[in-house]
Image 1 (cartoon, rainbow, N blue to C red):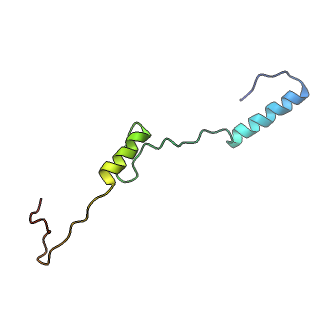
Image 2 (cartoon, rainbow, N blue to C red):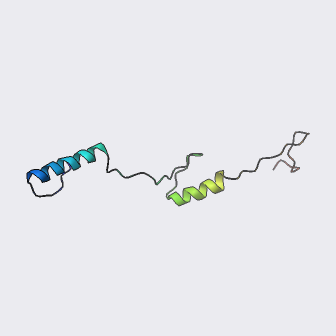
Image 3 (cartoon, helix red, strand yellow):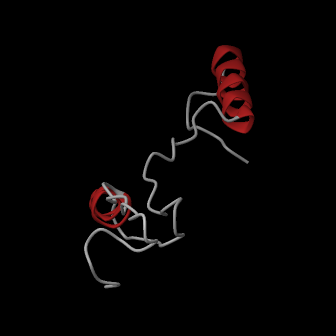
Length: 79
């Protein structure tokens, strides 16, 4: 399965078995820190830096609209 080329004496065989055991347990997995999918809208981007920019522009600092006493917005228009 996973064999590392070493000299085949008893110590190297035990070392090889130990390394294979660690590989099977998952100690040498790569960490998936390249998250490229937006948790807000599900958009898949090709680079983590693009995801940061997307989150800042699309989902960050959304100003809340203030309601008037008449039920409309304080801007005066619908749009």
